[in-house]
Structures are given as C-alpha cells and as structure tokens.
Amino acid sequence: MPFLQFLKTKTHSVDWIAFSAAMALSLLGLLTMNSFAGHDALFSHQILWIVIGVAVFFIAASVDWRLLRRSGVAAGIYGVLIVPLLLLIILGHAVKGAKSWVAIGGLGIEPVEYVKLALIIALAKYFSRRHIEIRNFRHIIVSGCYVGLVFVLVALQPDFGGAIIVGLIWLGMILFSGISRRHLFALLFLGVLVFSALWTVGFHAYQKQRILNFIYPMRDIHGTGYNAYQSTIAVGSGQIFGKGIGYGTQSKLHFLPEYQTDFIFASFAEEWGLVGIGIVFALFGVLFWRILNTALRGATNFETLFAIGVLCYLAAHMALHAGINMGILPVTGNTMPFMSYGGSHIIAEFLALGMLSGMRAYARVTHRDALDKEFSGGYDQ
Image 1 (spheres, rainbow, N blue to C red):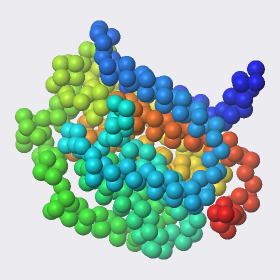
Image 2 (spheres, one colour; image 1 turned 180 degrees about the vertical axis):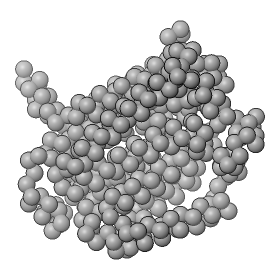
Image 3 (cartoon, one colour; image 1 turned 90 degrees about the vertical axis):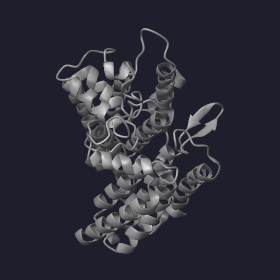
Image 4 (cartoon, one colour; image 1 turned 45 degrees about the vertical axis):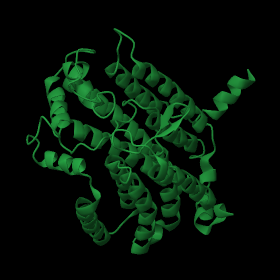
C-alpha cells in the first residue's frame, strides 16, 4: 500500500534500540504509578501522554533536520520559545510556589521543556561554526549569554531544578567542544560567585532550607527535610528484590509525596529493589550509548553537537533525579526522563529522540562538502 511504503521510507532510519529503551522506561514508570485496583486519573493521563509522545517521535523521525543548520532557523526557534518564559514571569499564576505552567484548554504545558531543546539547537549551531575557535573565551561568553537568559528566566519562576539542567546542558556542550582547562577553572570560579550571589539575594527561604537539609539531612525530618527523609526510606526499604508492584507502602500510603513525579525513582526502588534499579540504569545506559553512537555518526558538527546536547539533557535529568531521591543531592524538583508523570517532558524527550533518528537518515550519505558549506556559511543563505 502507498501509505505503508511511504511510512517505511520515512522511518527507515529509526533507532529502534533507543526507542525500545525509552518505551521500556515509560512502561516501568506506568507500572510504578499504577492503580489497578481503582481509577487513577494520572495513570490514564500518562498513557495518553506516552501515545502522543510516540506519535511525535515518528513524525520527527521522518523530518529532514538539515534545515536547522541555517542560523536564522536556529535563532528563530530560540527566540520564539523564549517568549512564553517571559510571559510566565509577568502574567503566570503560581502553582505550588512556581510559575512554570501555561494553561491551554485545561491542559498544563511547561514551556521550559521545549526551551531546553531550543537551547540545544542554538548552542549546536553556534559551536558547530566556531569549534576551532572555542578556546577563545569570547565564544564561551557569547554562548553563556544565550544560556544565561534562559537560566535567569527559569530561576525566577522559581524552578531551580530546571535552571540547573539548563546550566549542565551548556557545561556539557562546551566541554565537548574543547574548552581549555584555564577557562574551565574560570567558569567554576564564576559559578561559585553566582551561587554566592543567589544565596544572598536570589534563593527563597525554602530553597536555602533544602540546601541546608542536604548538608544536615537529619536536622528537620518533620519539616523541610521530610520529603528527602521519606525518599531515602523508600529507596532503602526496597532492599534487593523490592516489595512488589503496587506494594510500596511509602508511596501508596502517601508518606512519600509526589511519588508519580519528583520521587518516582524512590517509589520504583521501593517496589523493585536493587535489581529494579539495575534494570533502569541499564536501560539508560543503552539509551545513552545509542545517542552517543548517533553523535559519532553525525553528518556534520551540528548533528554531532545536537546529539551531545540531548545526551547532556537526559543524563542531567536522570542523574539529578536519582541523586535527589537517594539523598545524595538537595531536593530541587526534577523529573526522571520517560518515567515521571507529565506531558511536557514526555513529549519533549520523545521529540528529541525522534530528531536524532531523523538525523540518522542522512548521516551516512552526507558528503564532505556539507562540512565545507557549514563552515563557509553556505547554509546561512
């Protein structure tokens, strides 16, 4: 049939291994938030989000993403998606203390998830044209301005966890681009200064308490340290084989708050134990390996840097979420890729994987003159 032939042609480059790993993580997330004994709106909504995410994945996998190499396209996407962040600060209504959501037709959309992808595109375009000159500190400053605007707007919501992810995406991409050791130490020193300034005038009282609870985790387990304390109990109580699906007392009895979102890893660990944790980390390992493989096969530096940016994006989310849930990092509010409840991050993550699959379609056939065009400005016309 013509449609099936068209579909086969458009999706021949799909990375089925990466897609399967992402789907497995999504299904494990569903099993963790399940409510087979009764109706659970979050469970049924998550199924819908995953279905939409899969559809977005295959649509993105069929697109020729070489259009992103044009500077005007990359800058335009970045500029358009910055607008919702500005509007959130000015007009947004706080939900649980943060102005992170835009309500459209009764659905809550979190713009920062798509801004992260726009930032990766913008940085990949910027560094792909200047990777030879990256040791010039000027390029680090300019790229830092792109990131700094997003970082400040996200931090003002306030969404400190999202701001950290934005910073880690930038750090990972400039490290891969070849920053010098001297400039790296300068950035670390600048980071200390920024943190000091945020502690003095930027952080809210509850954010300071979370950091203090990280340093002294047992100082207030009935107050500001409650979430972190219950999370570590949930992870530890799973032991080797876990308590079984649906038998996690910390989550199902609501001792552990937000167990479908910010603490889904702790809830999963309680029910699946150390064995389950090993399965999740193995699936993420497969996913990261496939993304790195795509980066190595990139047709040009843009595709390679975009893949590295997606790797940093997903790895930062995974590491922060797991670290927070195990009591290694302060609680900032962070989702586990593909597992936590939420439409915005699920769709953005499947979109990113779909874009990588779309880029694989021309990875092996692009000739060397594509690189010459990229650095001579041929794609800017």
